[in-house]
Image (cartoon, rainbow, N blue to C red; front, top):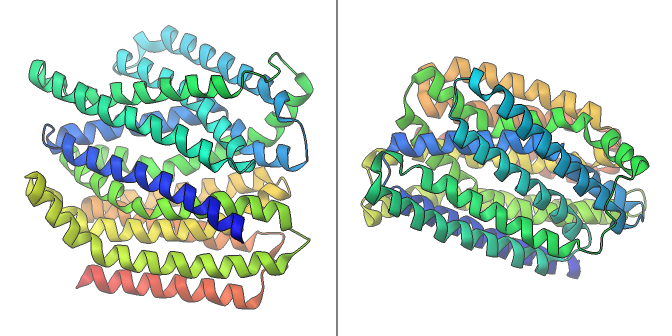
Length: 431
């Protein structure tokens, strides 16, 4: 438990620094951006997340399984080679078809390159997490986020003063700066790896990871497609901007959940089928911790948002983000609980089943968005995402092949917090 807490604190500190920097960055950039321009930035960043699924081929998800079987990490150089070749192929395909599609070719090419660089980090960070090198992870991650922070501010301000109609591009250029920095940091960390094309290893990773492309793609739909749908349905980039602010605020709870899950994943693979009592005890503790974090954030963020808008002298239209933020908090809590039960799918290598479950959740999310956005605008998108995450949690547990490992006491903890969190959020948003 001591190691778990130590590494969790490191991840929590690192991700907290990142989230605070991201939030401060948002408020600083909003001084030079209209809600519509900010909405356009978030659309571009949503495309970046979708592209990251394609450029990474989802190969990083097989790292815990591979290393958990006591295999040599140096052989993973072949996977980095595959990622590089895949990015080159995607760039060539895009250059061939760019003239036939109605999209900004320059921006898309930058986003492809950026997602390619980030794919290196997505894979390498899984190695660091599994080896519990939390300090190295924190150093690399925070350095890259400082680069993102200062480059985005500097570039946005420069473009604002020279070409104000394109000052939304400063944040995109900042993203490129961050991913390039991460790319070179990863290269330094894997310099002793065995590069080339180990066909047997590549086939092993492809077998585990490619079915999860559907899972990752569906997960991105759950997390980012709502911004695209708000723009398409309402034709209002300002609504996208307000919703994106609420989502940035709501994701603050993911700082704690990510820190916990990073460590829980390691503990699960070490103890599964050996010491289920320890796993259950750990689950109960982190569920209670996350539940109280959810309640505190739900209560505190509305007044903090109002204070921040006044302090930074922003458009008061951003105050509308309060209700959506509460639903985003709740949705991320359900996603945290789902992350606990999903580990068995990786352990049993049931990646196709997991992908199918997530596809259904993504389809439900799309349907709910079409039904709720016309009536409730961006609040409808937040409600749709929360319901979809709840569905994902329930179905993931139902199809878990190792349900018997979870003690009745553990399941009661989960059920109580699921209902109480929903009730508190509903009462708070209605009042």
